[in-house]
Length: 367
Ligand SMILES: N[C@@H](CCC(=O)N[C@@H](CS)C(=O)NCC(=O)O)C(=O)O
Image (cartoon, rainbow, N blue to C red; front, side, top):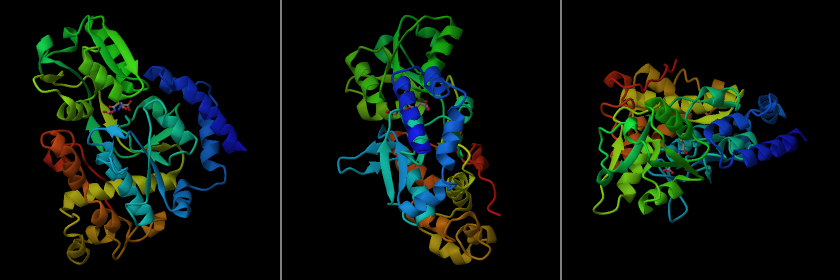
């Protein structure tokens, strides 16, 4: 009964969120102070953690974009490829022992939080930014950041833009982005702060945004820098030069796993599956040497892989949960490199480098 009520309530929210601005996306989901309570009721209706639900279902329902170049792209054969898709596989490998037990659900930006609230998906791996309002009023909790991003703009060199252009240079432009995102609000704030007036147009998805840029209906498009790099790599027509600016992004967009609030057992499983990929990277443990490291690694490695002293059983995971993650999907660097290097996104010198190499990618100890 509660679940039905929460579902109806969330559907009403979806209707109000579609095509709306980010502020209304986030605040509409918190349109009444009872929203967070409704979410809690949904999650705790039978006192069961999603961890148990996923285990008994035998499949992880993972919300992705489905059209985010190099992050989650639906392939012709129906499979899902990309960095976010692989992080869904990481969670499935940890909980279910099989990276293939993922049901991918493609979601627009505006519908994603409702899909978590109604239980249509267990979590999002959908280029979703961790923000204060989403973490509080919207009723989400966030796992470790898997990709440190920032919002940028993309214009045409033939229109006079370059990599050193600034927001102060975009006055009078038609700027396009997708609805229900942080992006929409950030660009409005940045233009106002730079003292320029822009015409902001929003669309349901970023395919439409990009097509409108290609047709010339939009002078500039804006979103997470990683998505702009991906779109330029895949869709820039011959003879055109698309340029991404400003060099320092206009916002922070920490992207990572997102799930309903107040479910620690599920959150811990997701978070430690991600941390396992980062710890493995720190230790040089990867899919090619994991069997060898199971016997010859240091004590933390052995513990992480399910050997003596393992901590996974105590958190409701199989002892070999992270062995399965590393052997089936790989460590952070393997996941990053195979998906993001091909479109030109490099870890080196970026926030996505390991903390030991001057970046922000860091995991607490497996102890
Ligand atoms: N990280 C931002 C934006 C998320 C988002 O969905 N962005 C869209 C366009 S504004 C996107 O980049 N999609 C990837 C793509 O379709 O290329 C958020 O959480 O609100």
